[in-house]
Image (tube, rainbow, N blue to C red; front, side):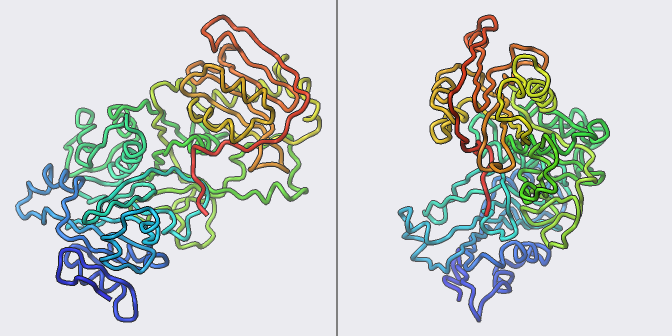
Length: 493
């Protein structure tokens, strides 16, 4: 059924008469065959209605149109089409009268996609809920956008997506745009960048002309992130072969989307999926220590050549939503760290293992008999003190005293955390943690904030009050498992 067919925003509800081919007809000539296949693959299992918003002025396309396309002899249209997808069969009246949260929820808004008049690759700025992607699973970074559809405000949570136009932008600029738009959507301190702006970020470091773009080297993408206000780190696989995957996993676990670089392509990694069956098979649980990254089975990526929320795996399962790349193909990844994170993941992980295994004061064998002959699972992540403290009441930290001390303890803006768990408790519960100041280096004893085991708790009151190191040690008469920290990423069922 098509409602308002001759108006600016027709609404197509899929039935026996009207299906995806109707969308292609209504959006002609903007939506080409490749873009049509993209949308159908991404949404065929979830969308029931589509609102077609014609003559849409898209801020991102206007940026590249003004900076590049308008300079051509034959110029494309300056306007776009915005498609809105709904999981429910909707009418124009329902959409116009969705004034409260309950009515908005009934629409099952799945997000939008901008259709540009560019060839090839007509798919522009796109924001789809992972709920629209039946293949998506695991834990991912999410940001939120609000859209206005003829006066009705709706919200969608997801990870930004865009396809390259092969002229003003190619895969490097598209990946940078997705990453930067995530940060500007989620954090007000980050500026919103447009595609042509991103192309121009590296104009002083280009080895040739700026556009049409020929792509960017890894160091140029790192420089673009620095100019955008980040303090990026570049990890190359040849220099971190022993723990490359663990480091990539740790930064994503910390809520940082990454630029993942292959020989001929760049994608954005922003989530991961794991299989914990290994923990439940006693024949395989034969190690003293595990890192949570060992159970990772896939990373969730946005590849501008594919649909959103693809899975990057070690080996192929024959899934249609798998990336054509494998983990072994990754040459480097770039982490867009904020200013006040001086300590990299590998240095913190070394410091945490040293504390647990070798430190004369804090090693687990001498401080917590409960760990004798026990297997441990270590999960490292970076978070803000605000987020850590906001979750204290819900998590309880195993003991009320530990919770209260953490609540009152002055902490740096960013802290590294190494959670300690065991196979019968992970991933739901932890039994302890190590906290480290992210502005210290891994060799400073004063970088340690706290060590917490089931029957032992120690914290440095001196560093937290800007005084010399002063260790407070407390014996805990009891301690219960408590919920693992889950505020960096959001679960996708």
